[in-house]
Amino acid sequence: MTKKILILPGDGIGQEIIGEAVKLIKHLQTHYDLQVETEEALIGGTAYDATGKPLPKETLELAKQADAVLLGAVGGYQWEELDIAVRPEKGLLGLRAGLGLFANLRPAILYPQLADASTLKPEVVAGLDIMIVRELTGGIYFGQPRGIRELENGEQEGFNTLVYKESEIQRIANVAFDIARKRDSRVCSVDKANVLECTELWRNTVMGLHERNQDIELSHMYVDNAAMQLVRDPKQFDVMVTTNMFGDILSDAAAMLTGSIGMLPSASLNESGQGMYEPIHGSAPDIAGQNIANPLATLLSVAMMLRYSLDESELADKIEQAVSDVLDDGLRTADIYSDGMQKVSTTEMGAAVIDKL
Ligand code: IPM
Ligand code: MG
Image (cartoon, rainbow, N blue to C red):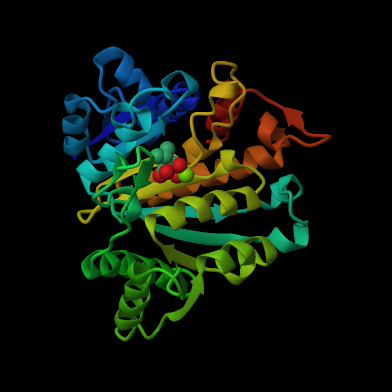
């Protein structure tokens, strides 16, 4: 049956990197008989400019009907002064919430060819393969009440709420256990249980669930220590599972271990396996429109989409192999460039990956 993919380029370099992904998908349709239909819609600042909303109703409807969503990035300087309710980021958060995408999988894998591109010593990062499982539709990102209010003395006060229900913790911990089972069977749950009651419940709930997952080795770490351990000895981790905000922060740190945030894809899944796929880097407005952004995280996001939502693991493997092959050939976009390599543009990198297929 033909599956539907909704494509949301978004803002900044989103347009350019998604352009390469679209070419890749076309190639798979023509040469590998991939049965998909694609449609494009607006999100983020681009959507705001066109419709006054960062997530137009039509986009959310199309997303709900799609088997998978492929997103570029949202955000940019020109929208930073907007009211927070209509900022580009709200479009992304609305899509996550609207589709119930509670499980965010962020792999941090170091391609051996890029060991020198990491700011850490090669021996610390060589062979790195971590999966961060970030809770994506709850926690302080969505908790109520929230806002900025004026106190009686005229001073302003900002407030947000960190809140998790047991059921929300259980379903994300279950995803982490399931993923670990297909890897090295180790889960480290990250919290701040020494200070925050909400994450004390997180820790207790994960421990409770572990009783039914005894084949998995479970450990717990406070988030400050986890941040330190990630840069000290990242290879100690297999799967990390954590809250929305801690996962946001730790996944950027983990990404940098791999040399460039421009290399890392992500998947966000809901309870029915429907998914949204996006590179974990942002819209990089500073380099937008210059044809220098790294499209590999987006092409690898297409691979994740094929694997998790389209039941095409073989094609996913092929794309991942093609990416590895172009790195073997010494092709590098600016973000992963080092001496002696061949510097290429966004479009050249995209074409090289397709060539390898
Ligand atoms: C991410 C981003 C988003 C987040 C922003 C753009 C809302 O940083 O996907 O990590 O904070 O979740
Ligand atoms: Mg982030």
